[in-house]
Length: 359
Image (cartoon, rainbow, N blue to C red; front, top):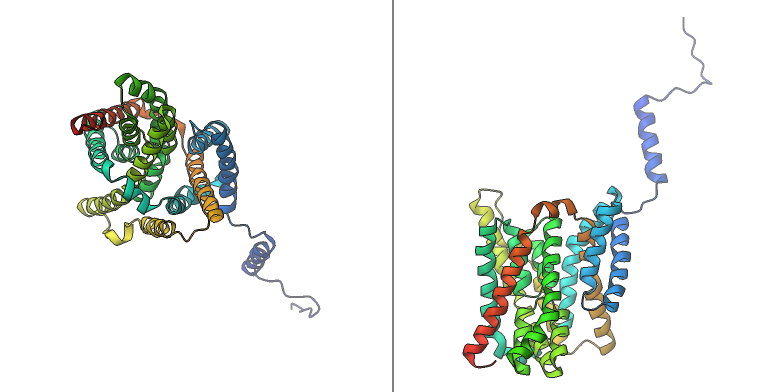
């Protein structure tokens, strides 16, 4: 006969013990969001990239950020604990950076002083997309990479690539490859455009129009324009701002195209409302606030710095997520595509000005 000892506590079932241990572990572990690690890494490296960009403005913080990120990713490696934060930065922070850019763009000023450059800008943008589509198809370039290089060349380099990335959702290495390709021809343009402009005997206005419509990144437009003359630099900057505003209709058209392609391919039904780039709408709101004159001068400086910092952080995160081996496997074809589109845009801008008599 078994005797029961009342002073001895009953043993808890194994399942109950396991639940208690799990409960204790959950309460004892520090509740640090997994996003913190990747965001902290991207922000620290992005700040360093911005300092390097101030030291060498011809390259700029965004390019330094993505190059440094790629170097760390492919030489040292990035652990799994950083991935959630890096994904958040490369997508969500990217959209915030585009919204913040709106606070530095006065729509009234651009509309007033850039109207005369609109036809040249529209023609060069059309040439960029057509040449990217035709040459990209001939070279066998993936469709999303074609779009990225086409948009980057047509509109405003890295900022345009950043704006369309949340819509077409390319691979991180495709985004990195597109930005690297755009950067390569930015450097070539800064070094060669002023020499060619003097050789062709272009006026300050003519060169400003050419630089503003044919060079991709804003910093490169400014560098090339002011190396030609102060008047050319002022005009090129205004033309570039006009060109940059066209990223809004481009993003809306791309969103509609993505919805149509998803429906045609028989995939999950995706409405335009679901993929509409709402951050572009907030970009317009930010631009309207900037144009209204409600932003104090001190706050205006802070917002411009914030926009620059956010886009560098986002592109740094993309670099930290990019596998260089995938880029190497792509070969030289994307660079050939970038060269072809860039030459087509530069030549078409000169031809339009020649026929319009504004050279």
